[in-house]
Amino acid sequence: AQTVTQSQPEMSVQEAETVTLSCTYDTSESDYYLFWYKQPPSRQMILVIRQEAYKQQNATENRFSVNFQKAAKSFSLKISDSQLGDAAMYFCASPGNTPLVFGKGTRLSVIA
Amino acid sequence: EPEVTQTPSHQVTQMGQEVILRCVPISNHLYFYWYRQILGQKVEFLVSFYNNEISEKSEIFDDQFSVERPDGSNFTLKIRSTKLEDSAMYFCASDGEGSAGPNSPLHFGNGTRLTVT
Image (cartoon, rainbow over all chains, first blue to last red; front, side):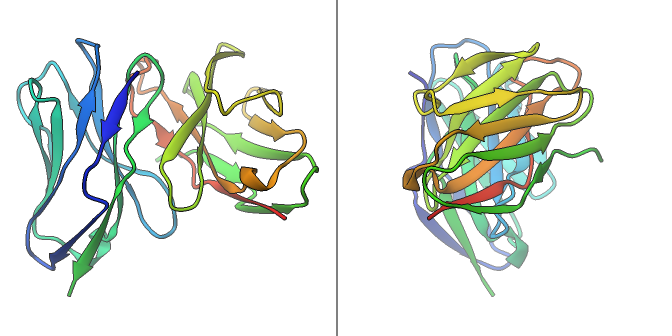
C-alpha cells in the first residue's frame, strides 16, 4: 500500500530564514507525481508545488523548492525567506494505485 | 481562476440524521473526489468518481455513504445516518488540467465542517 511519512509533527522558523520540511514515501509506481499542500487556519487545501518523478530537476515555485531524491524516495520542501503567512499545516502527498495519499502533516510556525 | 465550491461551509446535525454535502467542481474537470479530515488528523480519501460512477472508494466509504452527480455541475456526498465519529471536515476535489489523469494535481474546495451532536 502507498504510504507517505512526515516525521516532523511541528517545525518553527524565524521570519526571513529558511526551513526544510521532510517527507518520505513508498510506492511501486515507476512514474508518479509528488505534491506539497498547505493548509492555513482557514483549513483550505492549497497546492504549493508538485514534482514529476521522471524529471531530475527539482521543482521550484518562487520561495518554495523541493529536494527530490528518487532513489531514497525522499521529497522535502524548502521554504526560503519565510514569511508570517507561511504559517500553516503542510501535507506531503503522492498518488499510487489510489488517488492522493497524504502524510500526517507538519505544523509550521513562523516567529516574527 | 476557476475554483471548486462547497456548500454549506458548516453543517450541524443530530446523530442519526441524513446530511447532504454539496460541491461544484471546476467545469472542465473529469475526476471528482471526496476527502475527509478529522480534526487534527490527516486528510483521508473517501471516494473518487469518474464518468458518472464510483471509480474507487476507501474502507471508510461504507454503506452509509453515497455520491451522486445529479446534473452537469453538482457533485454530492450523502451520509444516511450520521454518527458522532462522522464529525470532520469534508473536502471535495476535482482534477483536470487537460490530462484527466489520476496524477493531476487536485483542486480542493474550502471544505464543509460537519458537526454531529
